[in-house]
Structure formats: C-alpha cells, structure tokens
Amino acid sequence: MIQDNYLVGRQSYVNHLAELLVDFDVEVVIYCRDYEYFLSWLHRTFVRSGGWQGSASDFKNKFFDHFAYERQFEIFRSVFPRLTIHSYENAKEHGLIRHFFGQLGFPVPPGSEVVWERPTKRPIQPIA
Image (spheres, rainbow, N blue to C red):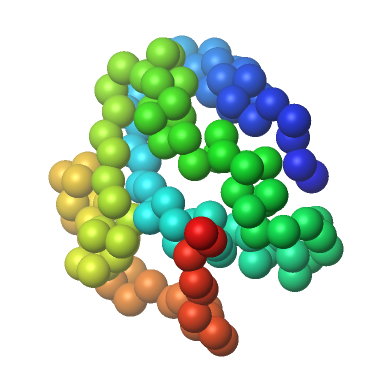
C-alpha cells in the first residue's frame, strides 16, 4: 500500500522501535542499495504486483522520499546515535553475511558464506 507521507510514518516507526529497545545498547547498521537500481527494482515490483499503473517518472516522483537516504539517516540518528552505513553493492562483492558479521566483529556462521539470490530474468534499467 502506498503511504502519502512516508517520512512521517518512518519517524513514527523508528521512535516506536527506540521505545521497545530502550534497555539495550543499540547500533543501527544500514545497507543502502544504489539509488537508481533500487528505484527501478521497486517500480518493477509494484507494476508486477498490480500496485502501480502509472508511468516510471510518476513513480519516481511519488516515492522520492523512500530514496532520500540522508533524511532516512537523520531519522535513525535522531533516536539511535550509533549508526553505521554501508553500500549494499560493495558489501555484496565480499558476501553480505560475511560483511555484516565482520562489521560486528562476530565470526561468520558456518555455511553462511553463500547467499542464495533469485536471479533477475531481465536486466533492471534505471528510471530516467
């Protein structure tokens, strides 16, 4: 479902999450996908599911806030000052699970070096 004010909802969600985790020492780790790739992937997903029927450029305008990464970071930092940000694509090159556990200083769980990924049938083209 499309939310009219995504960032307001996101702030509310993060505030609620902080309330639930108030007794814990939390560090948020965020992996961001390339903006153009993620936008194109999300557009294609919504079209396939019947959740979007407009043009790609209208989709980009409608969901702009989902890709306002700096604003997303500000929302998380407002309640979780310990925030680490990584590129999904860069981490994927070394293995996402290996990268994640390495950043935390934990050993990689046995057998987790291989991440199954559903192949894309046709290349995703950026939305202009």
